[in-house]
Length: 576
Image (cartoon, rainbow, N blue to C red; front, side):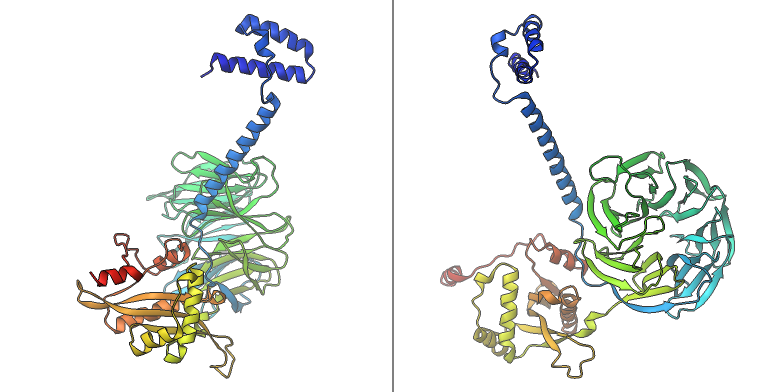
């Protein structure tokens, strides 16, 4: 609400501004009109405000920017809480190179289960789709329904026998791969159809074309998929599309357009999100490939930026959470592509001039590994937990990449009395990690007496084998981690349980699955000893460990509060 006092101060600020900037005549007129219109005396106007008007404007602008930055940081923090650190489980090894699949460049790839076999489906400039047995590399099926190159492949989420392909011949075709028959042909575009995808619930089909249109089809039980909405002509070619997990939102990326388009399939409204972090409308890159993270919370955008830029957004958000960079690329001929690891911890990006696939840890943005093998442009990527990573391109090969099973280099044994010093070193390292070093008073003698004479608890030690080729197995083994546990008892179930007191893996061996190996080893011990429970505690600030344990099936017992009596309190209680 404006008060007489605030009105007078505002007039004084204006008068001061006019005087300071040489508007003498205007200032004199202002004094007269202020008195006539607002009944403000000249002595009020000529009182000197503590802060000039220009400075107030600058401070207001600064506060506005600061607030915007704060809000952006809060928004970013909201999204980033669900990003999970890498665990080292990603492809590092070229398992196989499959040649002579097609007579032309391979433009698209998808991984699909056909019967009991995992198949690699590839689309090529030779107009065909080939199905390759992932385990043998043999071509087991060929589908040739198009008159030009096959640009994309997708499989129906509910009816796995239905495959949709899009082509340079301007059509999309749904094929029943069980019977090798065409189920439906779409001829609603005038140029290349670069992408065709089913919605997660199978009730929608969408296609993107270089005729600058985007078509949306709805499933009809009598007539199949029917065109219900055509968007366009848009400002440029539609390069990329993807459905959100709810199946009711389609996201589109368009050339010469700095906005991502979130299209509601309820009313076909278009909500736009600016890809430029500063909010301007300058178009410096094109979104070339879009995909949603496995947890459905993030949208990854590969761009044709010459530095191989890939941007991670929150769903329904313009806030850039991460910017990843691959190899330099020629913007005129590049086809940047990416796919997610099923864990959501990594993304695989390609499209650079060096023909490599970069393994990016999503949370940190670091390049965890580079997969080298292709000799020409990589055109398509697909990931499957069983098969691994499949890549195809202009060298006309299909390459399959798998993870090294690092856990094969990890062994576990029960500790002996002579290990007391090693166990103490693990305990001290764990205490340092937990910021509790000042609480460690245990000695080697304490451990020898209580672990191996009195047997109050047990310890297992995990060893990392430095080299697979080493002839001297013992010489190449390095202590990597340990677990200390003991038995408790559940009166309700009438069975013993295992309580894990400490679990620790040295920093240099984390991300190799060794912590999980120690946990599963003790789970096996629990089953062998017919235990009813297996439990442990974790510090409430250790979010990575909490998420890791929950991924293994552990459930927080929030209704229980640990009670502890030690030191003098223990003495006092014993003497009551």
